[in-house]
Image: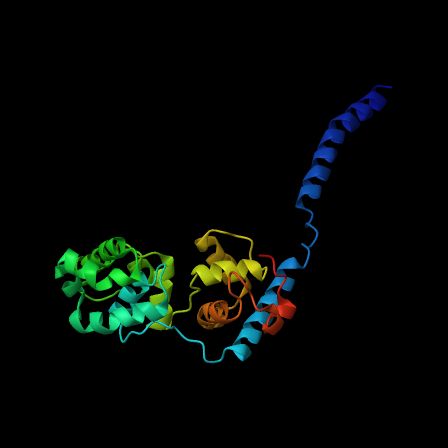
Length: 246
């Protein structure tokens, strides 16, 4: 009788332990595979890249420049302004200002007048002078060639840094301008609205070797075909891949 009671007690003690082990095993069990949405999105993204390459093989950076400093200045001037207008302004500007120190030393009112037609000329003057001052003070007058270095320049964010890295130094990056922000959402490649989050989302689904060309072709396509007000879906090379969300 005593032996039987001891066995019953032993079973009661071991029962919770067995249940705990079972729970631990359940927790460690592999989760079911996620739906293939990511791979489908990646495949569609690559198809869009390919279609844009065929539709716009001539796409390139439409800002005129011959070196990193010129492109930095042109990129700042291009905010809320057409590249064509910026090129008209920089044609003479780049003859007058050849070094970062030249922009720092330029009288503010004179420089504002020289870039007035690009719009927001006061803010752009401050941004250009601040960035050039950083180049002089922190980098010995030379434009840095890394993301970390470029982001140390006053007035320079990831978009401008990616423009420089891609077009001057050949470093893969995705430039999220207004066209990339609008078209990547319209084409259903991301539902993010923050430029940095859009950049990271696109980097996840597209291989690095496509980033620079996509950064050229999306703005090219956005200006000529997929405009904000009246997209030409009937003649669009990627219409069959686009859900036309916006």
